[in-house]
Length: 172
Image 1 (cartoon, one colour):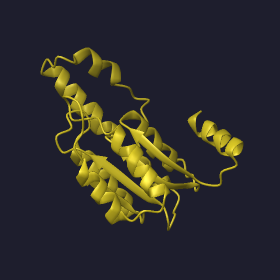
Image 2 (cartoon, rainbow, N blue to C red; image 1 turned 180 degrees about the vertical axis):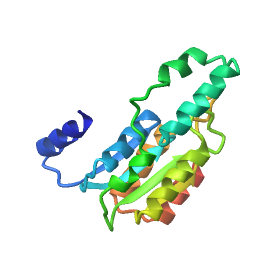
Image 3 (cartoon, rainbow, N blue to C red; image 1 turned 45 degrees about the vertical axis):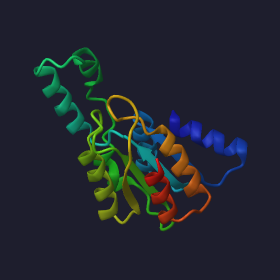
Image 4 (spheres, helix red, strand yellow; image 1 turned 135 degrees about the vertical axis):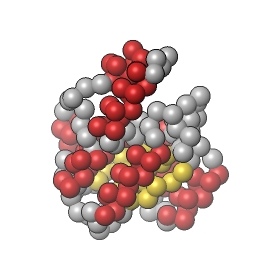
């Protein structure tokens, strides 16, 4: 599993804590690692993540009914086995010093901004430190924020302030 792979990487590199950066499905995986109760995540930069699987399935089915050009892709993503990260937020371990940056483009056509904001709001309501940062996604769907996830994770890993992180987002 990915969780076991993270443990193996930590052991090989003799790390006590890790920082995560993820884009789209990778962002959902990183949020899932948080939901597994890991206490060793210092920072997570989650870009364009799909965090509310019931909402994603509902939206995909609506697109399919409307005859979306991507019907086959949407149908292939419909699964009852997706991990609902938003629903699992109560399992995220408390950490006073962990920072979670949710990077989202309000024009993203694949992962809705409101869903990503809802994830951050839910995390904050549970006592975590999550910040939503609007960013300009790349590509025709405004979905690509890999470059920002990596940069923000690096800044966070280096102990940079939230103000510095916000300036980095503004510069891109």
